[in-house]
Length: 145
Length: 173
Image 1 (cartoon, each protein chain N blue to C red):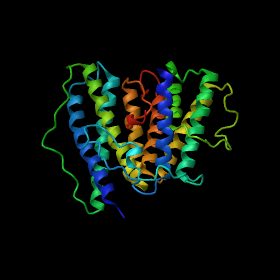
Image 2: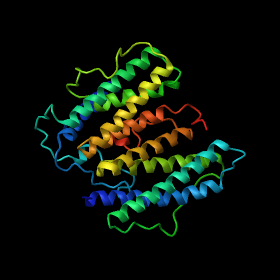
Image 3: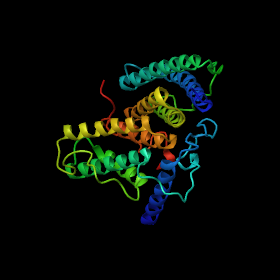
Image 4: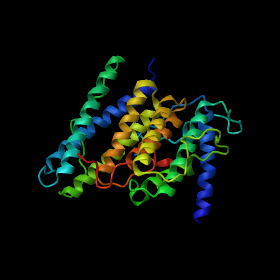
């Protein structure tokens, strides 16, 4: 039996995935595969991952008879310098917000939904470090530090 | 100044985890990350347990926290002894120390040793294997936690270790 809290958490995660896809689409257009292959690979992989999670969450919510939250017509893009440093900063900031969302989902779900959220939290935390940010002790839960 | 802050954090940590661990009501976090301008639910904010009540030693969440405490203590001891190449700049050691500080309990379970021969000099490969095993165990504990707040804490610990294992310069592709 899916609780209201669980559905709300999954909807929050889906909304975050919509936003992440929009932002990563923009970041991908600002990233050079030849000049910065590592960053390009991370951005492409992140886009693919968030797209898969959007689809998974959409399916999961429909299974519960809930209409998945749609993507917004547009999202505010981060105000960053038009260079690789700006792209990396925006991607790290985005993954940090995703970590908070996934940690929230962990707290408000059980079973397979929580397992997915733990995996997503870990992937987002690892991606931040892979992009060059020092690893934090409490990904998605800085209030615990 | 530093010791005062540490003492305060430790005290808060004990109170937080005691509350979170013995909560059977209000286990779920109610504050959405998107509804609170980036803030997230803390372990304390989700508990409705009586602060004066004594947590049962049989509480599975308290056992999970004790286990997490023991894992962090052993991993930190291993890193301090071995000074391995996997811990560039002491990143993992700092993560384990932060975890210990936050989850320190008044009576951690010392009856079970997470790994054999804790604190012994180990190869980088062996240390990495231990870190990975601990990261997976914390994720497993998070999956089975009864309290949402405890699950969040354990999942964040697991994710922090995973991130700490990323080689400096990023993930090789």
